Length: 168
Ligand SMILES: [Zn+2]
Image (tube, rainbow, N blue to C red; front, side, top):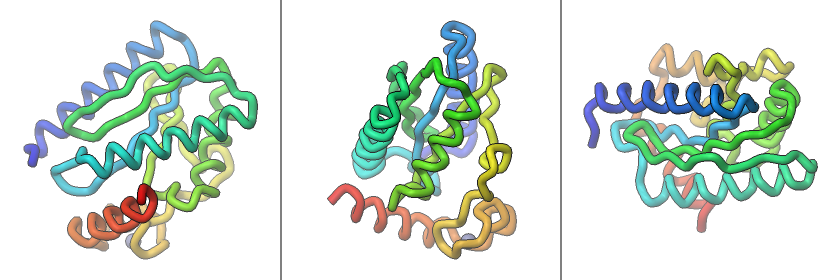
């Protein structure tokens, strides 16, 4: 169990790493993660699921002949992440990633961020997709989070159950 402040600190660290990588490479970046609710963000199930999802995304990119390179794998207190770079146009890349996420049976459990040169991630809505859906109730995820519509325990239970289905 981590302190909330340490999780926050690692989120900032991740952001900084991405900005620096972007400066160095000057390419589009994709950050693939899994946001496990609660204070334990990384465990064996999370790692195995994210690896599998990363492999699924790779197959998607390869099938579309989009070149990419795995730059970093990060394991931080805020979660684990695969960071990929691609010379591909950032807007088209975002569309491909959202489309992949939407059509993947377990896509809603993962976060695929496509990051601009300023370290900001592109919104789904700015490439014509709707807001992310909540994994518990199908409403807008953001709304549920702001209203704290579900307990962390109940979200964690559903995420864990679905991840187990995915990696079994
Ligand atoms: Zn909800």
